Amino acid sequence: MSRSAPVVPALVLALALTACSGGVHGTPGGSGVRDPYFPKAGNGGYDVSHYDLKLTYDPDSRHLTGTADITARATEDLSAFDLDLKGLDVRAVTVEDRAARWSRAGQELTVRPHDDIDEGATFRVTVRYAGTPMTVTDADGSREGWLTTADGALALGEPTGSMAWFPGNHHPSDKATYDIAVTVPKGLTAVSNGELTEEETAGGRTTFSWRTGEPMASYVATVAIGHYDVTRTTTDDGLPVYVAVDPARAADSRAVVAKIPEVMEWAEYNLGPYPFSSTGLIVDRADDVGYALETQSRPVFPSAVDTETLVHELAHQWYGDSVTPKTWRDMWLNEGFATYAELLWQEDQGGDSVQEVFDALYDGDYFDNAEANEAIWAFPPGKPSGAAHISDPPVYWRGAMVLHKIRQTVGDDTFYDLIQGWAAAHRHGNADTAEFTAYVEEQVPGKDFSGIWKDWLYGDGKPAHR
Image 1 (tube, rainbow, N blue to C red):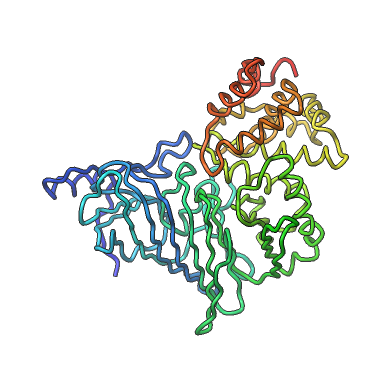
Image 2: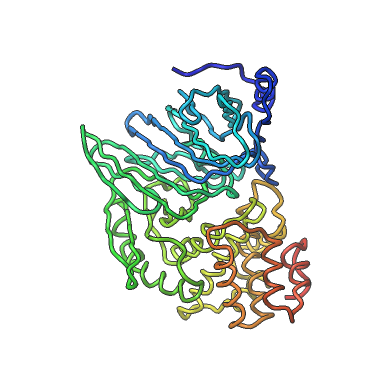
């Protein structure tokens, strides 16, 4: 049975509870990490190391039942802490197997453990919850969160939708490993990130257990439930490839899916060693989503996949999934890199060179209409103009142009050393734009990049010279 509480700001309630307990030394962890565009996303006072999620979903009723066991380390003395959870009903919360007080206010689930948690201590919080998960509409109008499909559901999380299906520290700066077990009616398949460790059927239901052993940001966690044609293969060097395709998309996707080994070989040659222990993709029927997403080790395509988008989303495994931005301001480090990889692929396949694309973008005749050509100069990639614009054209195209300016400055050999070295230096970690510019300058000390940063990365409007 759910414990009810007055709806008051989470931090105020936590302070009041602290004051009443007497003799405590901890303070409440902050609600939100003050991201420039999503200030309430994430939480202060702790770092999550592992999520163990057990989910049961019935597509007919759209009902989700979940248990989240979250292992974290306190970064300060804590009398209370917050988790992000949008919608759903909380049934019980424990910390170290002892009942904890809790309250809800907006997306904040404030937890008051029975005993204070010392700085540096590892602790486990368990949240039991249920309900109909939400579909979230972003500031830019796109849909994420928990999406109903023709025969099941699809969970997508960029930038904040993951909090619609499990509680956690939902900011890219706090990455963790994951175990995700999903129980669905027999005959359906549940696909997630990482490796499938167990598949067990009992009582008319099947449980699919997935494990992600490398750190993962919550926004690239996924669950896909439905009917899929599943293939399991390996690349030439033995990397497992798990592909799940909705049967209605199989014919349209077959030729591109067959290119995964070729694209992976190309990517490892150009971008460096692959950072995860498996790869693959999910192709579903969610045409109203309108975008593919680089969910870790298994990108999601809401409809039939094309080769260029496959290259883009697989490149994200290096740039975005392994090297993850510290804040949402740094999105160009994801999208600019993935867009540039897509252009490099086209160049290597005998299409337009990256220089030809760069010139066409600068001259305003790359896209079919003037509005699209002008849109790439709306704001600098290093300073998106707001939460609604972190996935706008400047982040992708002008971000890619920043990289090409670097390539023009240092030459091909050094450029490939830079992009491979950047992926290696921050493998499975987080980085921001200031660290990237410092890295480039440190690796190529004889070159002046100040004009690129000033005019192309941070400057307003179209630079005066290409």
